[in-house]
Image (cartoon, rainbow, N blue to C red):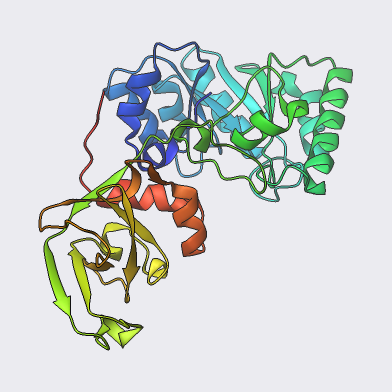
Amino acid sequence: MPVIKSDAYGHGMEWVAKALENKPLWGFGVYECSEARALRRAGIRNRIFLLSGLLQDSPDEALELSITVGVVKKGELSLLDKIAGENGKRLPIHLKVDTGMARFGLEPKELIEIVRKRHKWPNLLFEGLYTHLSSSDTPHDPHNKRQITEFNSVLSAVQDKGWRPEFIHMANSAALIHLPETRFNLARPGIAIYGALCTRGLDVSQLRPVMGFYSRLCQVKTFAAGTSFSYGHTFTCSRQSRIGIIPVGYDNGYPRALSNKASVLIGGKRCRIVGNICMRASLVDVTDLEHVREGQEVVLLGSSGQEEIRACELAQEAGTISYELLCLLGKLNKRVILG
């Protein structure tokens, strides 16, 4: 179940769905009905799963859009059962149990009691059981073992009540790769689809990044040694320097926290960002490049020659996560789809 919520983490939900719709998949995971509606309008006929319950959505929409709902609180059951009954349909649902994320989901005892009384909601098809891991990007974190144990306990308990869920899912991106005991018969890869999974101390280089972020030098200027740059004068050059100006800043989702930390690629060479990143401009030291010109391509995320800048690298330097970075870059810039 590829997770393509939040506009496919900035990549373009409809485009990603179109690229994957004919692959051997169960369906797509989304966050709210508006995302499901956009997919239906784009002609996507695959199953769509509402990951975190109805939230502010109406049960009517779920039925209209043929969505499988992940139930995260008991009150949703009666709402869904009522609308399904009024329309003469049986709506598939999956029950989400909170095993330690302490966010969306039913408490284990509550879920087991719901299963025991599931005949009270005759218009619902109790199809699946799932949970969400809090720490799978750190595979050796003890929280993983505790959540896996709790989930297996709940699964055993509902089976004792006579319920055999058709679909059981726990694994997200990192768990799918590094925690084989979380692989039941359905998985929910998200960030791994986009090649931007970051796990501490583990090699994920086999994943291929999907997004690149590109600009061009709009100006190149020469400055004397001792010149200080940009807001706050946080960088002073120790030699005569050539500085390139890139028309990209935090309004484009390029975090200000990357000031004086990040590199960009120009002609296959790494060049350092200098001075504070501005709203719509960043400065880069191009002194060591033999040939540099206005209009030359700048790679802020992606590959050039033998060098590569990945989302994990930028996220670490900015003190954030690759998810946030990709969402910002995808939302705030013109997107060009290749392939």
